[in-house]
Length: 397
Image (cartoon, rainbow, N blue to C red; front, side):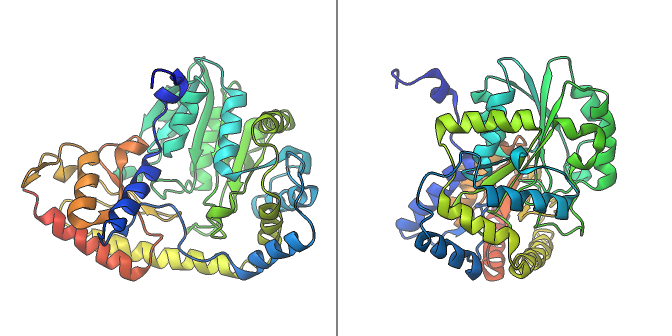
């Protein structure tokens, strides 16, 4: 261990991936684990996208692509931004990466210097925290509560900004809460940012197409911020393409070029076959994407109704993505057999071992009073999983 760098020793393992690994291990031992931890659509990738990938192999897309992505794909992304978001990102302002996760890492590494402050509304996605750490930045969190559906106020934002603030990073729809900022809410935040031109904004919009509010709004739509907002998106969630590993950004030109430079020294261009599949996804029939969104809406309604029947569990009302982030403070301090529930970590461990249901501790996302439950699972699995949870929680006193 002493041979490893401080960098890797200080880096935490992704708690979501850790939970997924434990689920697989327990399942291999014969346990019937219902996995409500993964942020992965349970639908197959639409057939027309798969067919495009097969054609790409036959057509010889098997050599190095440009680092920033094929010109045709970047053009399609540019048109998508204009069509769906009213944003003007030219193709040379777009960088295609190996998943939105790499896109985020690129941005963090090219923007943040040692000691720069990065504001994260909590709950936040687990990897934001570790990416800030890798970039040697200083994380500043803004706590939120279930009674405000885990959204920050402009007053909280203003109080968090200092002369050392470099970046503000958030997601809408949000992982882990499913919260969605309305245009009016974003406008109030934009007014604050307008007073602090030294702050750059990372807007993670990977769940854009899984929104139950109607129209998706991006903070990049506000003209006074357009020269310092970078939008992160990808095809994983909207098109059930998690394994294809294809994400992208729209950014000010200078920032896009910096990300191109960073990526060129680490991975070069994203997988060629995945790029051609993504082109088909963005330009092809969107019917299945809309159908998946409606399925998630039904599952959201189902899981909320089930959770509300469990004493002491306070679910939020997700407006997008496929997560619910209930407050479970009621169970902190309770006991059963040798179990003493002292934290959300312990409760998540209790549920996977006593109820055989995998969820993720809220501590991973910056809130130790909640757990994240994914409803990217069939309705039957959701019903059975929540019933098992209810039974296990009822044993705690």
